[in-house]
Image 1 (tube, rainbow, N blue to C red):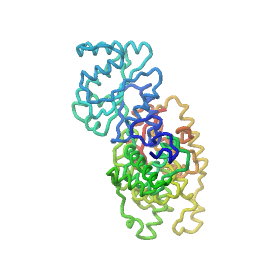
Image 2: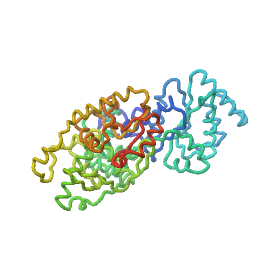
Image 3: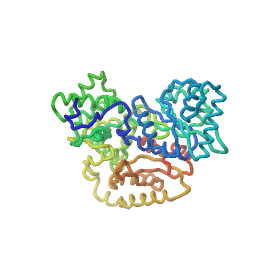
Image 4: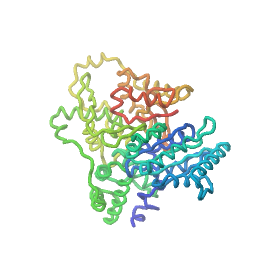
Length: 492
């Protein structure tokens, strides 16, 4: 109905998975790359979890399209299969005709076919969607299939896509053998408010839109608060907001349009924020807020996710933060605790203008460090006596170290602290300076990366000889980094 009004060629916010609308932000692109690598190079069962509507099925469909030619996939969309039905489905995916055969005969035929594929240089992967709903005995049969091997090589790869309930199912005593064979666990992050506009406009442009950004800051806030960052809810609200704007004959999505969508969808805000009076009661509190806002958004943008989203993330991003995390507000030599939940809420409101910016460039909307109001400083001599740090050289040094790390053959994995979708040395220098003060600068590596055609930067910590070593090392990260970042294992 509104397609012609907005110059669209198709509906931009369909809730059915269409791979042309796959959004690589909010760790989706990284998980996709890691899945392709793991299926191609690493043995073991892989688990991908995420809340309802977080985009698991879309990721699964995208994986089917992007797998290398030598990998053949069998997609199980219906998880409510019995043990025998699952074997029949896999046999059918392999092109076998085993109708009416006993389970033992089916298993033997499957093994023979897998061995034949292995001799041809093929790898077979079974993708199980909605695995949390799969009966325990069927999951156990999958484990037995995974045990099939020829020589030292496994004949079958398995990827389980499921809601967080899958984790609870795997924690049951009778599932421990299957759980022990899961070598990688990725979690789908909800969309943060600062990346929400990028997602919405990506979908709009994929559907043929060529105009300016149309979602007002107030509309973005309402969609973020109501959806909890879950893509399906975002799509529903955005679709109905476009319809409401069309009815009013306007091209700019305002809060009232989202409110109409919320009423029609029977959805309400789910995010709670602390009382502003706690932060703005005095001028001193305002000063601490402004300084901490610069510190958080300029260097550690991914901490935004930790303080706003409740789901837990294993492997790629462990979140479970519903309380305020302590963030140090730096002013000369004094340190004061500030609620990072409140900070991020006020930062996003203060930074919002006529055109909000994506998370990757959020820090550009804030004034440089030198222009932020500060408390009355001691005598200038105290500043002059501090040793000067060449921030640019720190960036260049760690960038060179990152390039050297990529060339090393003994480094297999690292810990990714965060990433930026643009290379902005000035935005990293504060983080590097603090890493130097912590004595952790030699552990920091800056690695160039490509995000949907954009040249970006990954910030890595440490170099490890195996994926397991990197995952274990996460527990040894400085407390500051564990609390601030949604870490993930980066495989070279």
